[in-house]
Length: 223
Image (cartoon, rainbow, N blue to C red; front, side, top):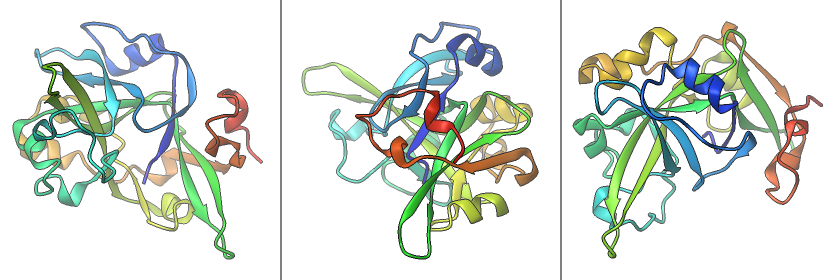
């Protein structure tokens, strides 16, 4: 389960995601947390467009009220059947969450957990497959929200995230178009484990787990 990640500088992210409409405005962050507004790329108009959405999907039928169950991650095995995700999936409401890296917990022999930071060796900025939805609140306003999709871990992530052995569905650059705009079958084919040889990971301080501590580059320094 990916519960925290980092954002790259907005201009770099726009170039990496091939944004043609709109722009992102957000502060550089080394600790993006659930419920925050996060940058996503969508292709509703046929062109890649920048949008900001709440991380943690609120289904259209929830009247804008967050569900009690966590909806920050959607397993690939259930996107077509789970109540929260099946409608966005079948309607083609797909997006890419933009990241510079992410954190996963490693369970030690004594039961304690240490965070590891994971990034790609071949790209500074990358997209993770996600779904989005729009839910209308009682006052008539709308909340736009998203979830990221997880897939079985590759060997590296299985060692790091040994408690659940899952990883975000990181998209190859060549798969961006198929994920955002392709037919359902073509989009589903992009959801696979990213090659372990193109990823690196290292242990970082548990300070990343405390939102009260500074949100800066020291959070990803290796121990």
